Amino acid sequence: MSDESEPKANRTWLYVLGIVAGLPLLYVLSVGPMIALALRGVIPNELADYFCRPASWFAISTGTASAMNSYVVAWHNLTGTEY
Image (cartoon, rainbow, N blue to C red; front, side, top):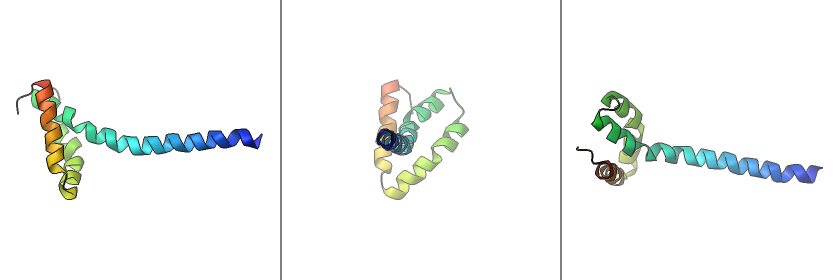
């Protein structure tokens, strides 16, 4: 009986680890679409600013601001949004 519960517990930790690692990645990847929606007027600019501010601070403090900017520009080009 105890042999059957061990693999289940190991898989649960893998799921938890995947969620913990995946949520910050999804947050950072949502910055591009959020800014594109704000520039198109779908959502208020204040909401996009509030939502994206932590990612901007993180990008500036880690030196990845140019990569984040390139990602946002790629979203603008993909959606045809003027900026």
